[in-house]
Amino acid sequence: MKILPIHPEIIEYLKKRNLIKKFEKQTGLFENNPFHPSLETELLEPRYLRFWSFRIDKKYRAIFIFREKDIIEIIDANNHYR
Image (cartoon, rainbow, N blue to C red):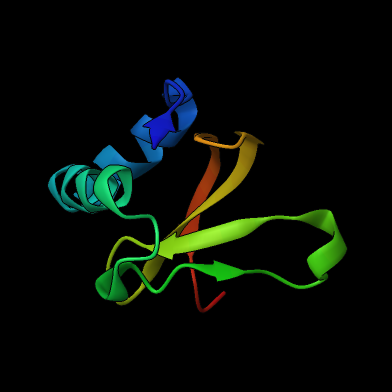
C-alpha cells in the first residue's frame, strides 16, 4: 500500500498535538496491512462517499480515500470524539 505525500496542514495538526511518532507508527502498519487489527480501519458513514479512517491513537483518527487500488490519500486527521 502506498500513501501519497501528506498535506502540510495535516502535518502541522499532528505536530501541535504531539502525534507525529504515533502517526508514523500507524502509517507503517497501514502500508504493510491496511486492515491490521490495531488500526481499526473502517468505512465511514455515509458509505457511498467512500471515506475511510484508521486509528492514530485512542483519541485521533486519520481520514483517507483510495485513489487507486493500492494508493491512498490521507485527507484529514481529527479528534474522533468531536
